[in-house]
Image (cartoon, rainbow, N blue to C red):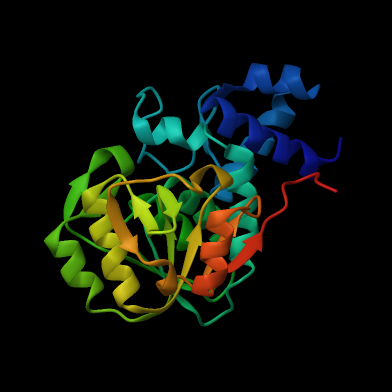
Length: 262
């Protein structure tokens, strides 16, 4: 197995299990413990995972407690391959010099990992983990919005964060949402929806990152009508009424391909 293939397998295992030991990785990949440790050090440096004594966990240096279970950590493992494919496809849509609002979410966290290997982007975010990753890109800038800190998602929320969003203007807002419905893009968290709405208001174009499970789902809080969305990056092109609604609203659908897909 080539080193790049082995490292992709390591990342996939960490995303699936949230925390993996060196011994488990070495056994699964038929590699020496020392080789795995070198791989983990390289991947940690790239921001793709967090190296621990004896293993690795999800990315975000000291921002997520590795022994603590919670909704955000659980969501990171849901549809992980699809979210990774979406993140990789999305990063190619932006060019050096672009300014991006990026909100807090599991797919945008993976997107930020990809941004750490991009060049010349400016990121404005309410997520401490996303700011840390995005700032690692070549010629990158990252602005972390302040406000009331919520530990579960390592994010800032509330009036202070919204006031700071209004001081910026970005080319793009890159958002994750809870649902994509003919009523618009929606979320389950009222305070996160407020942040996303403020970002939409201060951006020229809106890109939504949503795996196929989000289509035709409903949620209580409106982020934006479909007409306000420029494009949706997803792992599977939707069909039926939601597809018709996206066409009618002029939303471009960008289909990501998972690694190994033909």
